[in-house]
Length: 614
Ligand SMILES: Cc1cc2nc3c(=O)[nH]c(=O)nc-3n(C[C@H](O)[C@H](O)[C@H](O)COP(=O)(O)OP(=O)(O)OC[C@H]3O[C@@H](n4cnc5c(N)ncnc54)[C@H](O)[C@@H]3O)c2cc1C
Image (cartoon, rainbow, N blue to C red; front, side, top):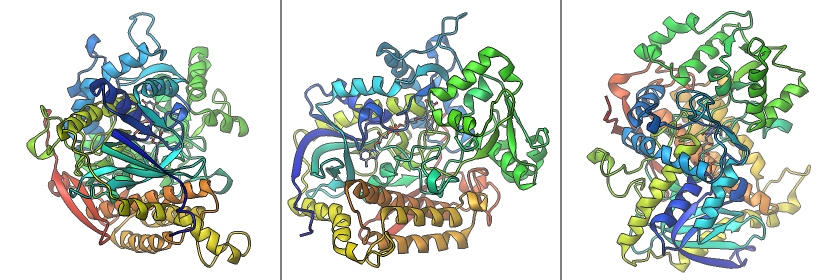
């Protein structure tokens, strides 16, 4: 027995366990109660659901709203839009399912007190763009969290979930999850009939542009630590499109969003010499991707591509032309408020660099890559689709159930469905919950079993980093250098360097190829070996250790997928130097992977892309 595994164990029995109380998790918790009046519904969150997840700081726009009752858009239109943006590859059944339910979700937000801006002339919601509506969203997350708190039997805040429990009586069935309190260090065992993973996406798997004192300054939340993928991967769930990492064009250094600037303020970009640059790259891009470059709107990755090519040609930096729009006092106010509601850091960075966008056109740059399933990208778990809409080979059970029995997901967790954003993630949480309630009801009281041996083994594993530190700390030299263990930060920086240099990060202009990917996999293997010797001096570091572990297995999955897809499907997100062109003949397919935790082997596969909507 380890030094720290004598800590108290708390057992929590429930019907439905929601892991992660962000947008999707709050949706799942709320809807579980709606359909499961008598069920025991538990939400577990590593932070506090009041202000957790990517929406913690608030948002200025809800990016997924159809406006069906005003006949503004129909769900089919949204599927076409997402398919176009993802260069043809989306799960149309899942996307349609979200689009047809998302408006009712937004109407509930308004009922609960979220102020949505109105167009003074039409009385409709104020549009920022075709799919976006503008909100006063500083309190978006607390409003949504209140609904979840009232719906849950119990919300457990400050518990980091480290592993899923598996059923000892039936193979490939989930039985709950374990984790530890980041405050008092006690061990938690959640025994559940169904688990809905809603743990967000992954930042900090690629080296960020800002390192050292600025390392927390990333576009995506630094606490989004890949549990949404790490937990299902280790449970044997099939993953899809994990190569489809996202790179964002944003204001330099503060990562301030550009959507409101382009869509509402009608600002535009130019190179360092005041020239437009996208037309310069039209022919060369067409050579790579064919007709996709002619689609409207131009896919997000291709807009990144033109910017990157212009910078490589020596005509950077690229700037957003704000000086004209900011002469209009209304637009100037909107421009600033856009940041103050969700990315205050950008305003602070501009102040620190003496940039007034009325006087100076600010620089744009591309971010390091992130892994997400809800933005302009669709990495995540392969999930069963809606019964009334999904083709047969996309259905094997309950809606949003993964390939592991009883294991559901929503939001960033689920793959193949880009552009769901905050509202679509909440809506997908609701969809998953409705199905999970039916799954639990169909079990008819049958309870998955996780035996004490499994639980004791996990407990020992979870606290091992504390043991490693306790045992090895006397050998430390120079404050942090130990012959016996590595610290979570050292491990994180090693991971980021491997992914950056071999798997298509910023330092290679997102370029990779087979030899680089193979070398990356080899280095990841050494890193995985060292994770057994990670040392955590306190509970905070223990959390960092487990976050790193989830990031590493996710990175391995990303690398395997990137190696498997022998084409460059999304130039601007990443490039396979050995297969520079998009190849619709051989690769108009989803990629799939399944990890065998006993052998450490990955099984790669392809799944067909069914176009259901014309
Ligand atoms: C920078 C940025 C800007 C965005 N702007 C917009 C916008 O303007 N409009 C819009 O509509 N959408 C926007 N989005 C998208 C939106 O935020 C996401 O689509 C949405 O938050 C995804 O929901 P989720 O529940 O999957 O993840 P999250 O909301 O991030 O929630 C994940 C939750 O899981 C918890 N968690 C993670 N790991 C564990 C663990 N191991 N144990 C327990 N809990 C865990 C986290 O703490 C978090 O609370 C933006 C996203 C980003 C990153």
